[in-house]
Length: 161
Image (cartoon, rainbow, N blue to C red; front, side, top):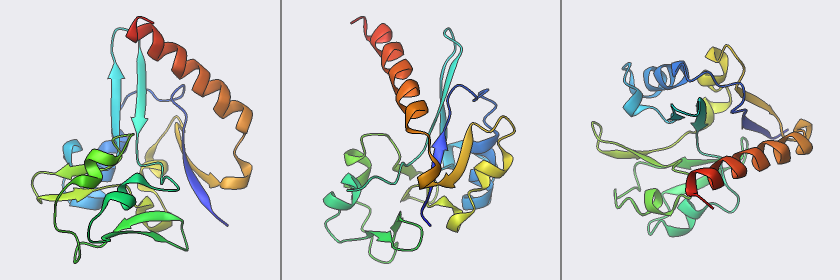
């Protein structure tokens, strides 16, 4: 059964532990800039938003890759990078509308969340459960719509619309 990574911004405390464990798991160092997840903070508003690859379908990053280095894993329905094919052009980074694709400036390669092979470490360490890896069929559509509406209202206030 397909599972998806759910982000509940209302539960996020901005502790950034998810960034730390992600960087340790994927880069072997405690360095949030090398994580595949990032917490975007609006300090004055008290708003934190974990940003991670939503595994889009269709995925814009896959569509722009000139060497087909990005593909969808049939088992986990995630987008994965084949570093043997990747030429480092970074078109995928530019194409991602969510900032889910990133660049590890130390390793000099593009990076993205690949769901830790079906056991996302960030979920295991998220004490307030702002991150959850749940079966796609159990996601509450109404709650997602309410959260989307709240986020939209917040962004309109920031944009002055």
